[in-house]
Length: 180
Image (cartoon, rainbow, N blue to C red; front, side, top):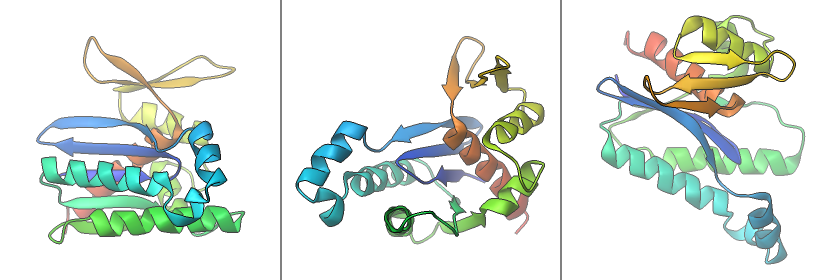
C-alpha cells in the first residue's frame, strides 16, 4: 500500500513509500522572512504561500506515485484563531490535491500518540519510540538529542518532530488501513 503521510504546518512533515522505497523529511513551506514579506501586502489573508507550496508538493507526489492513501494528523484544538485558519487551509489543500481514486484519511493526535506508545507522548518520546520501532531511525545526544533517518548505508539525514509524526502517521496507515 502506497501512502503519503503529512504532519501539516508551516514545517510540514512528510513520509511516503513506493514499491519498497521510503522517504521522509520536512518541507519548509515558508521562511520567517517570506511570512513577514507576504504579511506586508496582506498575502497571508488572500493567498498564503504555504497553501500553494503544499498543494504543489502533494500534487507532484500524487502524479509520480500510484498512491492508495493520503493521511494527515487531525488536529482538533489550537491556541489561536490564526493557527486554526492556517491548519484548516492546509487540510483543505490536501482534500483538493487528493486524486479521486485515492483515499484521504486523518488520525486524531491522541490516537497517533497511543499507537506510537503513549497517549501523552512528548515530541522527544515520539522520536524515541520510533527509534525502538525502526532501526533506520536513531537518536544522538542526551541533553539536546537529535534524531536521524538512515536512507541507505552511506546516507543519513536529520529528521525533526514533524517528520517523526509523519512517519508515525505512515506506520499507522500501513497497520490500520492495509487490512481493509
